[in-house]
Amino acid sequence: MGLRLNLQWKVLLLVAGTMIVIVVVSAYLHQLITKELIEEYRYNNAVAQVVTVAKRSETYGYFGKPDDLLQEIQFLINSRPDFNQIDVFQITRAGDKLVATTAPDGPRLPYLNEKSRDNELGEMERPFPDVVSVEVEREGHRHWIITAAINENGDNGYVTALVQKTSRTDFVTRLQFQHNMVLGGGAIVSIALLYCLFAFMFRRPARDIVSAMSQARTGDLSARAPIRRDDELGTIARGFNMMIDDLRSRDEEREQLLLQVKNFNDQLQNEVAQATSELRASNEALFDTQQGLARSERLAAVGQIAASLAHEIGTPLNAISGHLRLLARNHPHDTNTQRRVAIINSQLDSVVKSVKGLLARTQRPRPALQRLDLNELVEELIWLVHPTLEALDIAVITHLDHYLPLIWGSHDGLLQLFLNLTNNSTEAMPSGGRIEITTRFDRLARSAELLFRDSGSGIDPSAMEHLFEPMWTTKEAGSGFGLAIAHQIAIEHGGKIEAIADERQGAAFRLTLPLRVEAALAQEVVTGVA
Image (cartoon, rainbow, N blue to C red; front, side, top):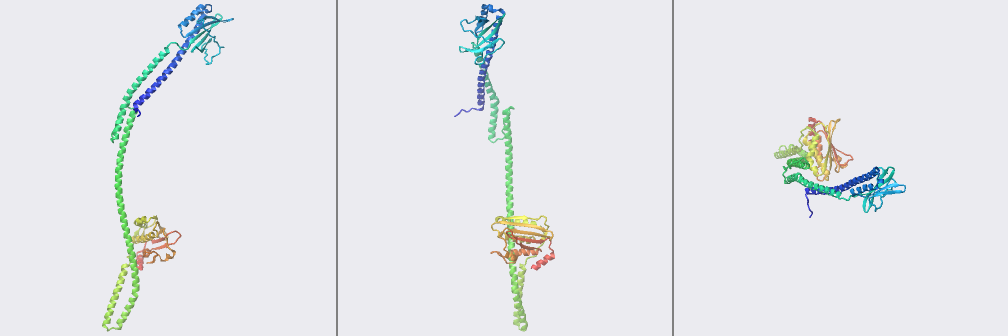
């Protein structure tokens, strides 16, 4: 299991490691820079000492005083441990003459001038005119060979010194040790101060924030983190408080939304219940309308049968009545015959009254005409038959002329006509289809037109002339009165209904209604039909 460190210790370790790296790098650079500065100082000082020996030799004429010159350079050797050897030469015609040296038994130092070759490291320097130096290695140590020219009263010569580059004293080591001690102590003090500062400025605010988070985790959205300072932790605490405020605001919004959703659900349930009630009422109205339509068809059938029966019975009854009158005239004095003839006539009158009463009961009542909006009647039809059409997967498409004027008509009669057309279309489309209803205002004829078209099986051309005849049908379970009643209703309104034969699939009917039907005309039409 790995060691787990908190953020404070991670930061402290990071700072400590950084400081250690800084101390090590600083110690190395300090040592390097100090060494270079000391070497530069010693080099400049050594050059100055060699130049001083050359100047003093020029001034005091040491070429003629070799003992004084030797004492001069020996004093320099004794006072400067880094000077290993000094040779002074006088240039004569016979060659270079050694005037004085601090190492009589050692090898002679070379004469460096502008003609001397540089070493392999390219370290030859000319700090001053007539002064040349080069760095060499002797016995495993780096040395400088410094040559300075001597011009003494016309005599030329030079002084050459061998100076150790690295100091034999431990000054640099002690200086570096003290520097490292100061850096290490400063690093330790900085880490200790950082720990105290971290504990004071970070741990306490962090503990407050963690405590507020724990309080908020339990569901208490009133938790707040104290903002102690305007720093990063203060920014975090302020951001936490803002987040808690946002959460509380969103929680309140969520509660309001839940309340709104609950109210919406209640309202939706009420609307569903209301829509269900309206749908139930619509189904009941449709059922009543269909029942009325079936009743009208049955009455029409009974009327047709009664009319046929009256026609069939009327002729023999008239013949019987004539023969009875002849029989009564031929036997005027026969009381029994007269009595039987009277009984037969009374029974014949009773039969005639019964037939007339049956005809009267089966006749359609006169329609009550009123001003109607044909478009609204179409929309009411769609509302009535919507459940049936939806169950049969039949779509209704309307193209209504909104500039269509009001017409005079019977609300129930026209609705029955539309229901008859709709029933024929639904029976022709058991697997679904489409119904198109179009209204149009014919300004020339001053009439309203309604085009009713479906996408069913259509009408056989041979059946076109029999469509509106009573009791004529091509359906196995049909009564044959639907279109006949529609035709009669159209006539009662002073209009007409006709089937349209075109190349499109399905059946199409056109209903034409005048904008106004005169009362006398309507009464005449109704009387003629009856």
